[in-house]
Image (cartoon, rainbow, N blue to C red; front, side, top):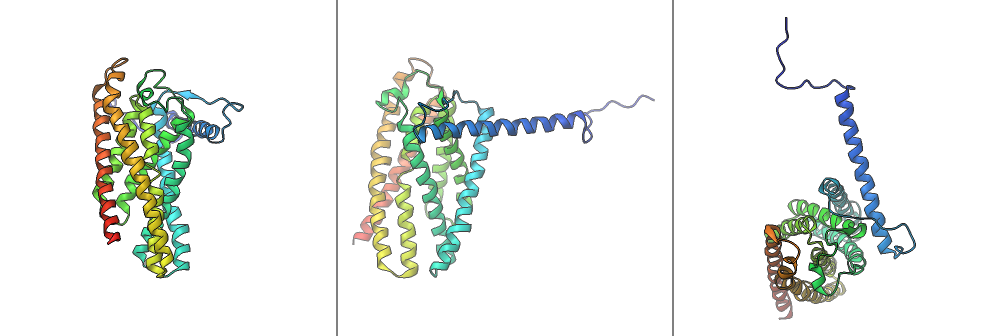
Length: 318
């Protein structure tokens, strides 16, 4: 008799054309992702070592999510393993052998060690990449429409890696020892990921890159201060506490300059210079107003954290 019609297509047996097609697509996607990562890292290397004028020319391209989302995922996984591997395999064992310290303090110290590594690396990479862009100053150039959507491989690499880093940071916050500002930190990471994604995808990459560069430097002396404080508490040596105080003072100054003064100017530029210049070549749309609202939310978070910093400073002074 005639067999009944199939409501769903049959699953192809192993080795069939359907399975081979699936394997081909997977291999092709992996190959394209690997090639894109090589292209991005090469562009970053050209800028970082100042070889752009006499080496292989840097590639330029507009954002393409189908190409870059897998790259962002690879970066996020890599930074997750780097962060936790550095904590568990290097900092933790070395510190536990050197001094007697509780497990909770050891976890916090190892976390701060990984933060110094990541924030410090992104600061060292971000400064030459962002500051070498021709539109970095004056700020009105952040909003002009001269090839705004096309970026060099160095800036795209910095952007995608930064997003991948914050994706893994969002996950890591959920796994780490809960701190007092857990909710604020979770909100900060979520807002940062959304701002980076929208600015990259919808043509606000210039002001996005400036913002990314400003958010990193202050965290380096902050976590160095935490490391010294944990060692001082465990060892009882005053020299470590003195060093922690000096790092905290440096952190407060860098935070005030980068996250309040300069970032405050950036948010002001978003409100004053952005709308009239963007309207000259396109409609702002919901993405532009959403980015503006999120930038103001980030600035409010910085003000809240600086208030906490001043509370600590006053408490330590008296």
